[in-house]
Length: 126
Image 1: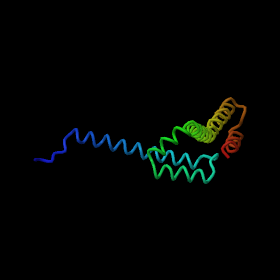
Image 2: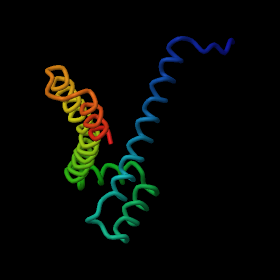
Image 3: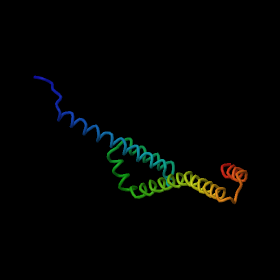
Image 4: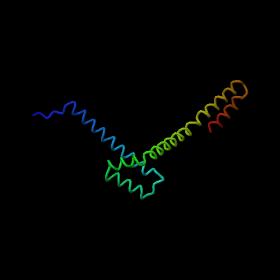
């Protein structure tokens, strides 16, 4: 008898490995949410963690059913906070380029001398 690991055996192994990775990802996500939640006390966080570590399938199911809505709200708030930080870091650049373009137009039209343009440009870039 030949021990052959055929195509379908590989496909089944890939399927179960994917399920395992999804399960680990879910547990990490739930544990991160437990510790991110400001409304839970330290004792409740410890109890949830113990529940999820000792009885993972039941713990994850109960957590998702009982706290799934608030979990989604916290994820959305965190995403909005990250987006606000990103937007605040990105927004000054267009203002600087708009100001430099306006100064170049004033220089080209003769309103500003080249020396005044360089001085104003240095002030905008500072």
